[in-house]
Length: 78
Image (tube, rainbow, N blue to C red; front, side):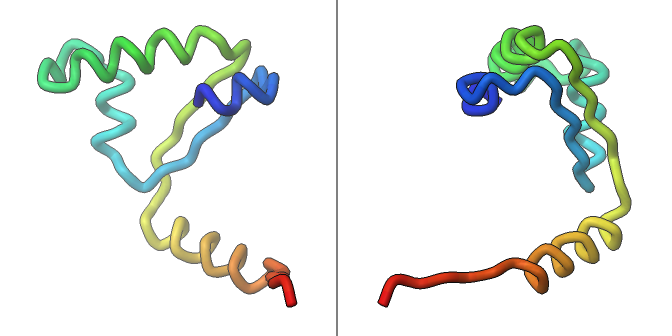
């Protein structure tokens, strides 16, 4: 996220198939083991004017990843 801020991105939308990650972010106090990481995350999050994170089905994530690979153009130096 800090890299996106360095690129002056102000809006971010994240989709993940990790429901625990979404739950951690929504309920910061329920995950004391990750307290220091969540504090850092909170500091980074306020740097965006719009921030959202959604949980998607794993199969949807796999389908989208496969499509990205199929449409990507790979170029290698000769």
